[in-house]
Image (spheres, rainbow, N blue to C red):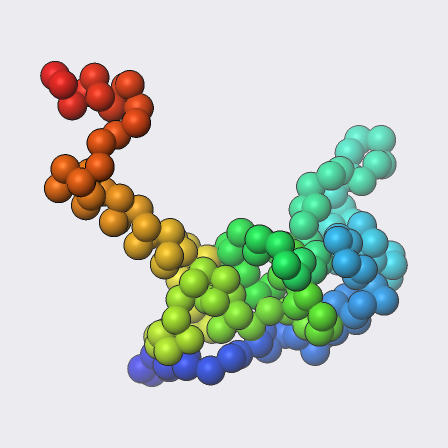
Length: 161
């Protein structure tokens, strides 16, 4: 089967089963999996306890909301899966879409992704944000072309030798 092209906003197909976990009643702003009622907590998260039965502070970003007006969370290879990080839409009760995750990575809206849903999610999560890569590339070119001088004594010493 040929890869499908992703050009529009697509949300995780499992969103309907996660709907109760993504609701504003279950996950408050700045909330995490610890704020979910016990009946909505995932079994794998319930098992994250220490030898005394206390909840370990792992997977603390799970079921967190993206915070409006603040830097985006780090996009991972599971960036549209609310159970895997702070990937619930800031105002809507759903996980972020692939297109929204790509926008956080500063990909243009016209960028065409190829592959399955999971493949595209991994591509986005593994990507260096476009604007960051562009800025680093320009800085390296400026340095190589002699347009800027390094500000680090360690770099100056290496260039002098």
